[in-house]
Image 1: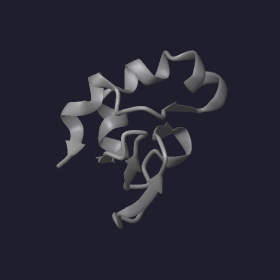
Image 2: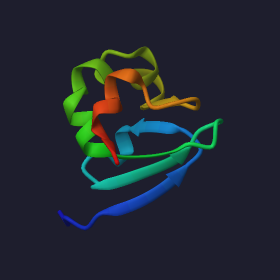
Image 3: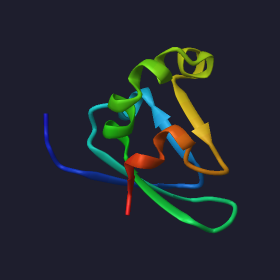
Length: 79
């Protein structure tokens, strides 16, 4: 598998099963026009148990938050 980093820009914080292992850096702009970037794989791996037990992650294969990066993930934000 390639170690090439992919960049994705979106309007919300997102963790998707389809992006796991794709080495993706995600940048989103929240409703307050604050730009936030994070490494998708690093956030997922660090909080894997938490995401895997969420109903939305099991049913829809993703977790999103349009307002902000969740508090439990903020320590992994790329400055």
